[in-house]
Length: 394
Image 1 (cartoon, helix red, strand yellow):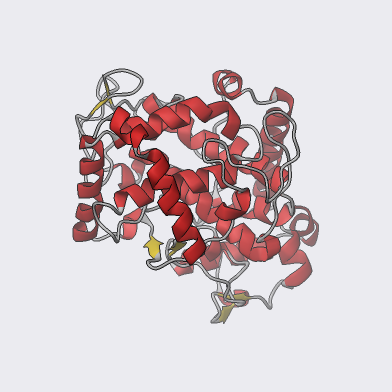
Image 2: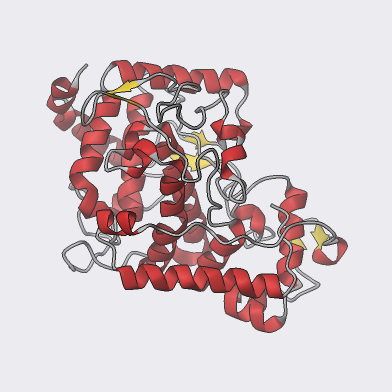
């Protein structure tokens, strides 16, 4: 099925989706960390992607993302729109395999040295381009059809390496410091979101970044972080403005889809028939690092311990939930041990994350002053934690 046929069936697909939203979920799939998938599980995902490629769906979604670009970036439609978009892609994949779920890439785990991630190996999505063209992994030697015929391209921002991305400690801090969608969205979109796109380069740094399956893994992870933030008492939080400065609410319409934002707010209900592995609201682990990135629990526990060992003034400044709700020396770690049992004898100082480039800022129409303020804040965060001798186990 090529682009014309896909557009022809869009209205019918939308009607069926609205019917499902009214009746609830009959099949809730689980989005898992891609690195946790067995070879057999990944083979099923890869098979779906190959069939979607053959039927023109990658062109279809690249066209939508390109057309709606300014409506969905640099304003507060960002999170709900991309959740709806991800679910759209996932629903199409379920036509080929009813249990298809978009995995997420726990990029925070790989943030210090992204190029070394197993996700970028031939086992999964392949690595850097050769002459910019991706030659290995699930999309190896693919020719993409939008906006014209070209090889799927990647070009890491440091040659064979990438600059560090925003790490779990900083994102954990953002999730604690902001209780409104506008500030939460700005601090994620202008940090982790941009650094991953720019680090990968190639198609990922264009209006049609959806060509690269890394886009879907990346945005599933951002959506997972939003889902966690929502579970911290922000389930109905929707504020801010659209690209025209019009105030947004749960009743505002999502660009392209024309559906209320409320239909994309609640994971596991309505049309959002998915959940994230490791999610939930267990009170013992709700506000620990294991909610943000999920490597070995011992690693997350060591990070928790290190953050609790920070001076009280720093905890109040950067981690207010730790300072106000979880006294140092008494907080449960993953529901089993106290932070006193963790020894901080290893780890590394935090690196500076790669900045957003002028090209990226202009491409998105971002306010350079806001971007500069957020980047300066992230560097101050790194400086202050390093001065306090915090060592990151990630």
